[in-house]
Structure formats: structure tokens, C-alpha cells
Image (tube, one colour):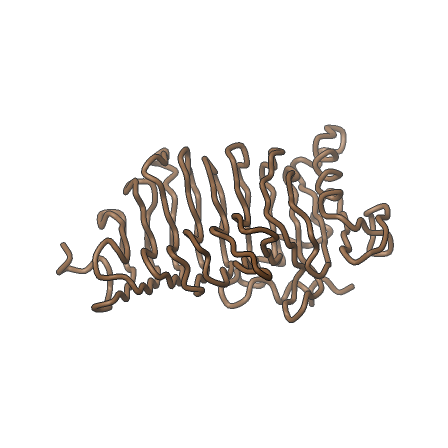
Length: 303
């Protein structure tokens, strides 16, 4: 298997540069590499493509346990799970600490693995990252519901698809107190029935939502509740996203937890807070198109 060929496809048009992705996911850099083939008829040892696990949950549990073994010192080196599979049906109720889950191969026309489910992880997966994985719902619920304690979680170069059969996901990611969360270089596909990214109460220190594409015409783009908190030296950042929403593209109800810069925002809503709601003191170099006009935002005539 040529991992370089598979990684060239990571992330689509809004992805990280190839050089930076490759530097993060070389197999030689990890402590332990696990392998998952969702199409395998039976689960193997998980230590090679010839004997893979056939369940992502099994691999996550194995990596989470291995990271806790102090003698190996792999908590600092990280582990990796390399995954192939066509629409693998799993609801992830646990994540592995300091582990990368990397989608390889192809699923339909997409050069990545696909996981079909609605995920509410309860096992703390500090530093867990998904790279080049497609997510689809198996019920009309959020794709990911992230509680506090999952600091450092990352979604890099993934696809979040709102629809599967008759199911529609309200949100792609619904977070609570998610510090150091990275949502970077992803495609959000389809009309989510609520906010694509819903940021709930609690600390959002150093959260980064950057370089994403949201073109499905969701009800709303990014929603930040007014009960978020942040240490001022660790402000969140919403930067360089392309967002099309029926209503508000970016709604920062707290006004002082995120810097909002360089976003391209397209809304069917009327002008004003219905299209974008961010304190102008915390925003720069955005471009907004709404029902009445378009242009740079903040606009001088809006002040």
C-alpha cells in the first residue's frame, strides 16, 4: 500500500497543504499503528492490512488502552488507526487519547473511508484527531455531540454529509466546553436542519474553525452561544471559511470569545444581524452577501 497516494487526496479544495498533512501522518512517526477494514468478514489482530480489525470501535479501544501503558511512552508519540471501509455502520461512543484516525482507500467516489452513525463519545479522547474521513448520519440526530473533557479533538480534511436515506442531521458538530478543538479544511455537505457547527456553553480556549466549506444551504452556519468563556490570551478563531446558509452565517452570541476574519459569507437573509451577527470590534476582512447587498464586512454604513 502506498500511503502517499492515499494522502494526496486529503481534504478536498479546502484542505491543509499536502506537505503539512504528510508531515502529520507518516506511519513511522507513530508509536503503534492499527488497521481497520470495515469490509472484512471477521476481526483480526489489527496489526496489519492482512489481519485488520473490522470495527473502528475495537481499534479505538485498543489504542486508548495502549496509550495508557507508561512503559512504552507512546502518549507523547501518538498512535494511528488506518481505516478503509464503505459506509461502515458504527455509533462511536468512545475515542482514543492521542490517536489519529486516518481514512484511506475509497468509498464510492470519495477517496476516503466512510463512517455512518451518530456519535456521542463518552470516553475522554484528549488529542484524538480524524483525518480524511467521511461522516453520514444513521438517525436524524447530530453527527457528533461532544461533551466537555474532549480537549484537543481535531477534524482535518473530512467530509460531513447531512443526509443518509431518510435521515437528516441537525448539526455536524455540537460542542460543549471543547478547548483546543480544531475544525480545519473540511467540507460540510447538504442542508443541515440547524446550525452546521453549534458551540455550547463553557470554555472555547484556542478553538480554531478555519479553511472549511459549508455550501449546503443549512439553516445557519456557525452558532456561538452567549455562555461561552475564554481566557483572553487564548481567543478562538473563525477564519477563511466559505459559508452559505439560509439564515445567519456566523452568529457569535458572546461577542468576545472569537476573532472572525477573512470569511466569505452568503446568506438568503435580510441585511443586518439576520445574515451575520458578530461584534465588529472582533471582526475584520470578511465579505458578506445578503438579500439586499454585498460587500466587505464590517461595512462603514453599518456602523
